[in-house]
Image (cartoon, rainbow, N blue to C red; front, side):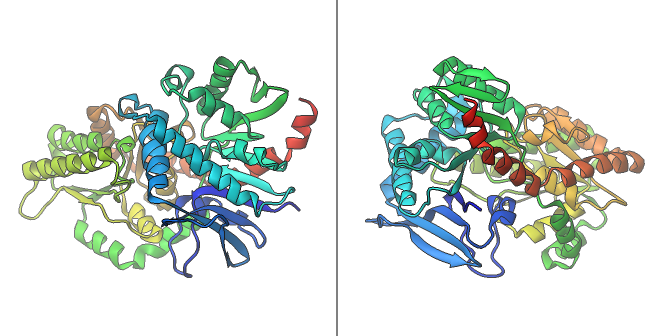
Length: 461
C-alpha cells in the first residue's frame, strides 16, 4: 500500500496528549496511520534554515518540517498568499495587493518546499497537497522527478475567469493547478469556475469534471469537507461539565444565546453581523433583555493591515451597541478575541438558540456543521447561514440569508427566536442527517479514491 504524504503550509505536530488540533488536522485525523507523513512549515523563523527537513515521529506518523527566513515568510505568507491570493479568492478585489517581489517569494518558498520534500518522498507515495499557499508545489515536485499520485484540495473558494483575470499571474496559477492529477473544491460552483478558467486561459478541453491539456488528463471535482459529527456531538454533551460552559450558562439567567464563532477575518462578515444584531434590538424590542449575543473571534494575521483595521471596527461597533441598549443588569453583546478549545466550543454551541454563520464568502465553514452536530435533538437551536458559505449548498434547511444585508440577518434572527419547537425539530433533523452523512471521513475517502484512479485517467488521456 502506498504511503500517504500530506503537505500543508503549517504542520500540526502533536505536542502532548491534550494538545488542541486545528481544523485540517481534525479533518485528516483518520488518515494519519502509522507510516504516513505530514510535511510543511514548522512555524519557526530562522536566519539560515536547514536544507533537509527536520523529522519528528509521533504515534507512528512522521512529521517533516522546514523553517523559513523572516523575509521569505513575509513575501510568501503575508505578501502574496494573504495579501493577494486570499482577498482575490474571497471576491475582494479592492483588497488585493499584488507585488511581483511577493510572487517571486511565493514561488521561492514553494520551490524550497519541493526541494526539501524531494529528499524524503518515495516514487510510489501518494502526495496530497492542501490550500492556496502551495498551488505551484505540485508542478515543482514533478520537475524534480516525482511520478507518484499527486492531488490538491482548495479549502477556500475559487472565482470565475472574469475575476481571476485581475490577478496578473492568473494563467500561471491555473496552469500550476492543472499539473496535479486531481484537484478538489468545496462546491461544484468552485470546481466549475476553475474548469472555465482552464478552458478560457489555457485553451484546455473540458468534458464534465475532466480537463485535457498538453496531452494530460486531470480531474477537477467537488468534494465538500465535513466534520467528525459523532465525535463532536459527544464532546458537546460532555462539555456540560466544562467550567467555562457552566459559567456562560449560569450568566444567561434563562436568556436565549445567539452565538458566532469565527477567526477575526474580513471574509467572515463580522461588522455586518454586529450591525444586524443592533437592528434586531431596534426592530424587535420584545427581544431586549431576553437574549445575549456571544461572538468569539480569535485574532489572526495581525501583521496584515486589514485585520488590524477590522479589530478596531469591531471594537467600535460593540461599544456602540452596548452603549445604546445595555442596562445595569444586561449587556446584550459579548465579544471575545480569545481562542477556546474545541470541546469548550462544542458545549457553547449546544447552549445556542441561534448559531450565526454569515461570512461574505467562504469555502465551506465547518462552524455551521459543528453547530448542527452539537444541538440537542429534544430542543434544537436554529442555524442562520450565509448563502455565500459553501455549507449553504448542503444545509438548505437553515435560514439562508444574504450576509451583506443586516436587516435580512436581523429578520432571520427574529424568525429563529420565535420559531415553534416543531419546526425547529423538523429543520434540525434534516440538517443533522446531512452533517452525519457528509463527514470528514467521507471527504477523505472520496478524494483518495479519485486520486487512486489516476492510472486509469492517464491511460485514457
